[in-house]
Length: 432
Ligand SMILES: *Cc1c(COP(=O)(O)O)cnc(C)c1O
Image 1: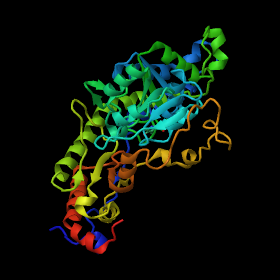
Image 2 (image 1 turned 180 degrees about the vertical axis):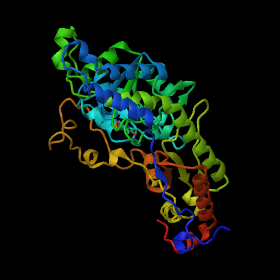
Image 3 (image 1 turned 60 degrees about the vertical axis):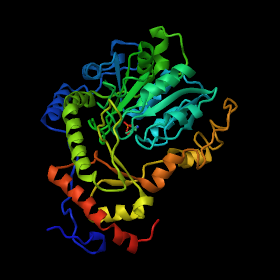
Image 4 (image 1 turned 90 degrees about the vertical axis):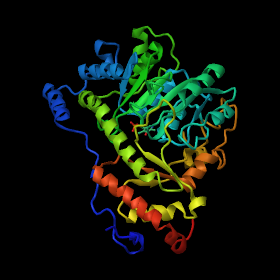
């Protein structure tokens, strides 16, 4: 018999166990790592025009496996997606002062990759159903200075890449897809990330598959692939001998992935379909259990797309329920639900954008002469993103734990219990 009294108000908790932290490393990864360790060579990259310019055997095998899986011509491994996005923005030939449109609902690196080339991030609003870039807002933000769009496949669902590619065609823009959270999600029968000019995946611990740190960029464009490989590995030291004549953005870094990570990545990639299927099964169980609750928007999957659920995104209709998100969140946490997050982010609200202080302290690059326009980051530029963040978005971070079906059932039970006690929350908690 389920105790009806909310745990928040002194009743018993629905969930009394700690969920197991996500753990996808097993014997295969251990053996792959040992095999590399036994060679004693943990990276074969050389930052010179040399046969080892493209990295060691595991790095190259990993890139081939990734390109095969995602059905792309080129996969370029990097030591993080942060590095990868920097190399992608450089590869497409962005100039200082160019504007690049990006979503405010993403990890900060999607936007700093733009600033790294002294280009200017412009934030467009998001869509209420997919939380990805809203096409009308993207178009409204295009100026003569716009050169690219970074589309983020947030929470595990692809951005509307066909519509973005139409804009790209119309306005001569390049599209970079940040697919960190949506590896193997499908968009119109193709993998998310593979339909843009360049796509990128993260192999950070929290992602579906990981190597601790790491990333992979994908493209069908030979020139972009080669420019990313150059930026990855000290371009400026290599261009002359390699015979590269286009020196624009050939300012290199060390963004190289090690052999250990690559060897682990090969094993992790094999597990991606199974990991994804498990995420989707959990999400279906959540949806089946939660769909009867009024005032709760569950994940909306667009036609001919799949969702891979890095986060299980929900919206609470606080007007209809007359209960604040904070009250519902507190009640769910009190029931023992682990992994919930209120709101997401609004990158444009970070101090760096508010004060326009990035390089040094004088407002560079925004204050530079090459900046043609005073780009606005004030509250109100992304009304949907802002209101969902402040008031209605509730995420279940599926990336954090490994859940048994019984635990998923308990999460559902906790939601039901809180929903049947909403009247009490109205009475006892101040609406925020
Ligand atoms: C994780 C993440 C990144 C950054 O990836 P790293 O490999 O940690 O640098 C970028 N964008 C999004 C949307 C992410 O979730």
